[in-house]
Length: 244
Length: 244
DNA sequence: TTGCACATTGAACGCTTGTATTGCACGATG
DNA sequence: CATCGTGCAATACAAGCGTTCAATGTGCAA
View 1 (spheres, chains in turn brown, yellow, cyan, red):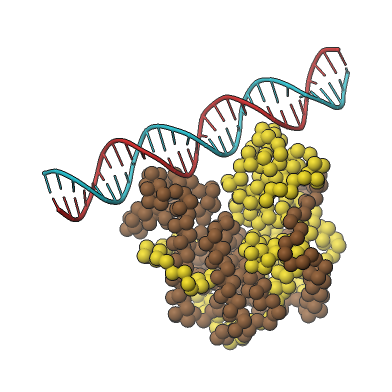
View 2 (cartoon, rainbow over the protein chains, first blue to last red):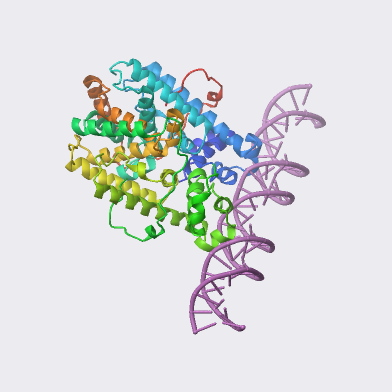
């Protein structure tokens, strides 16, 4: 796990080594799960030095956020300048470093404000593309472009956030050159083929539209629903596949 | 936040109240972020009672896992029995309680073994459907059905895991009756329409296939890549949209 | 060489954590 | 009535946490 600090790490300043170690520890254990002592150990420095360079754990986390966002910004601009052929919503994130992507994956579920901004920017970017089209991309056929873009981003980022589970199922981490192509090809298949026949599709749409009409407003209304209080549900029954 | 323990909670045994509170706290703060004292406070009991009923924090977490999986199993069987028209990979999870879904979302990124099993079972379920088809569902056109199913599940679960960001973008939590239809409709749009024209699609496929051929084996090979050591990347530049 | 600023360490402090223990009220059982 | 198991609270404790601080090493300017 934390074995590969050797050759290349010698070249980095202690501050950079701490930041890199924090990237890994935050990504692996979450913000509250990671400890300053653990980060210091991973970086090969004393806990005091972490404090000296970053002031506090929260400040260290903010520094990680800013660094990661800067790296992503740079990568994106390079990609836009180079004009990659693949559409914007499909992660060209391959060239992004593993640790950066893993950090983003954690930050997205760990309540990072920077990650939230990143997500929202991606939604805006995607919305622009699907509204105006782009080279090879037709404008999307939808009457709710914002939701279209948001859900598309959620699905794309979702594959990053759940990369651990994709790794287990695919045999290689999709955030890695060895695993990415297989995931991306499958994603293209999914986006391409028409799984549902028109009848079922229309039926599903109608049901959802009706549900939407009957549901309360658009703002959040039912702040919490009770969970079924069947305590007896705790008996065991393992042999069947409980798939969503 | 933790305001809605009132009427209905009086009816539950203390053990059930603790479990429900743990569901919420674990989901909100993660396993290491949640504290036994916090859970006890949310449940309106003393910390000692949590210990008395569940033995340890880890055991409490396992109990939550088992409870949630049992609820999901029940819900799924009811759904199968009732024969919902919507396809299996689209969350009919609407009927599932909010707290259960939020807990699963956290568990999927928090290293829960039970959540991993849930994911894998969902992949197997989906793979069966896309291989054999189902009422209204044609078998999927792909030469990698396993990856197809895995990525599809990742995208579906991804929308659950990132529900916080969808909430912010859509104005209502998609795990809620008020927010679900809009998300589901957008998902149908995405799955339906052909965003990329055939030329670009073929081009992307070819590029990915080539990348796959040139990449090392199928097992993970490049365990870590260095991150760009541009420390100067930390300067500020906010006005451009860093999407993705 | 002297001096100063900075990098780095290691010990220490106060606090929160998970857990163990003790004690008490109370309803069922004999 | 005695007693015992159980639900529950209160307290205690060791470990680990984030943070502070004084001391030491190190390289550059004067």
